[in-house]
Length: 116
Image 1 (spheres, helix red, strand yellow):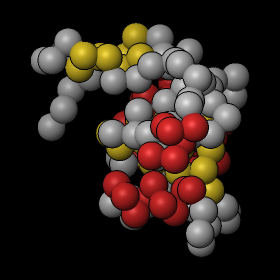
Image 2 (cartoon, helix red, strand yellow; image 1 turned 180 degrees about the horizontal axis):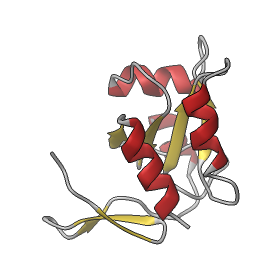
Image 3 (cartoon, one colour; image 1 turned 135 degrees about the vertical axis):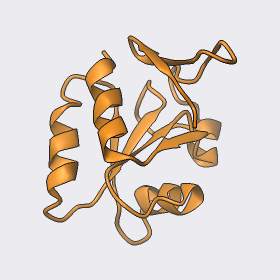
C-alpha cells in the first residue's frame, strides 16, 4: 500500500520524496501517450460514468474550480481507454500523472478535498 501526503495540487510520495502530480501544460505527446488529459494543465483525470452515478456526482462536486479533467466512461472514449489501461472497474476513479490510479471511493474523495 502506498502512503501519500497531499500538498496543494501535488501528491508527495514520502518514501521516495518524489512529486507525483505536476501542473504543467499537457503536450501533444503526453495526451497521445495517455499521461495527461487534453486541455488541462494538471495531470489529474477523473473517470466517471455518464449515467446517474451518485458517487460520481459526489466526486464531481468536489472538483469545482480545480484543474481536474472529467472523462466519461463511454464506448470508444478516452475514459474507456484509461479505464482499460489501469484496470478500473468502478467509477469514479482518478488517474494521476498517467502513472498512478486511485480506485477506492473514499481515497478519491480525500484526494479531491485536499487539492487546490
